[in-house]
Length: 559
Image (cartoon, rainbow, N blue to C red):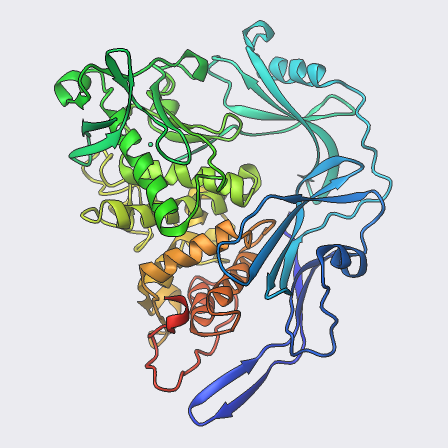
């Protein structure tokens, strides 16, 4: 079900002095079709609006929450002086409301951006009539998975919005994840906690990878940290803020069946590890350390959760073509899984594929988009991380061509092309403009994800005459340095939490850009909006001319 949004804009005035222009922003409020506030952009200059001093004041006076509502604050750390980000999940009568919550951003103690998804309920029944064990058995029977093959299971009681025909309804549900080596165990069950019926299923995994010397498959000879156990070395590293561990599943899907990858002298050669494709683990283990280091040493971010969550990866996942020609982030076990390849791909462990799955982990922890509902956002963001890490770690490889090293069919030079989304040599073609006939008519999340990933290409690199717009129109690139910093700020500072549309994502990125500019609506924020306009989201902003700076030169405050 699509949600319609209505925006109320309180007067924006522009004062001009010479060739310099200054925008005086007023308060902007967006509501959904039910009248709930989707976001508010506050301005200290707007005297007609009282800016709440705290989240509690916002909940009481602006959202008008009910007694049964509770907002639990999530841990978050701001790395930039003057900025505070408060992130909250919504609960009703003690039960978490999936995808609901509110987020607040302060600059020098003043709230400037509040956004989220508040689900208003009256008299909703939060008492289940079946147990989690009964829900587990029901789902196992539904999937025809023998109950005695289930080693363990995960169960969460939540309130969930589920689209049914022409409306979206709230249900009290158990979210069931079975841990079993059964080949059909690839979904999460959403079980009605009051009737026991299976309402929907969701993907269980997001899909698309001492110092030893590694003969990697795709990146040549590299070095990475390992660990010594008795007289052998294994692919484990605890020298960083998060443990990094790579093991072998030998065609299993149950991670408890993993085995160690071992070398006797820490010189991991192709002759030793290549014959059984175990050398794909070297690409994974090296790439994960490189990705971690880029996030930590450049941006101060410690793993997916920014708090040192362990980074565990498994190679040779599964024994079907689906498993083998794929790589995954497991949404329940919180691990990375890599297939050995089948008829489409070689081992799915090139640097960009590992970064793509790592990106799913970041999204899972920092944004929380439900993969079943917002799969195109998930995939677009992971392709963005893939391009960033590829540019930084393997600059000799084409930045914008995802999966260029793993294609078995020589007719294809990549899996997806973020620059030229419909390139004939890409195995998977993508849409690059929101709202087109082909976009609206497709249910393919990879096809639709091109809107997001192509926006990032245009933001960083620029482009002219894009997406059917007039040839004299340009999206002016900001360069990868600034574009990468914007992604980190928006993702790790909570700007994208509870976003549910491209319009909301656009607004959140604009506010993240403003925070990098000292909370001003400057060139970066305008170019962010400009790039979104180029992919069909929002209106075209007027790029400000800064006195003494040619257009395209970014202000030093956020370089």
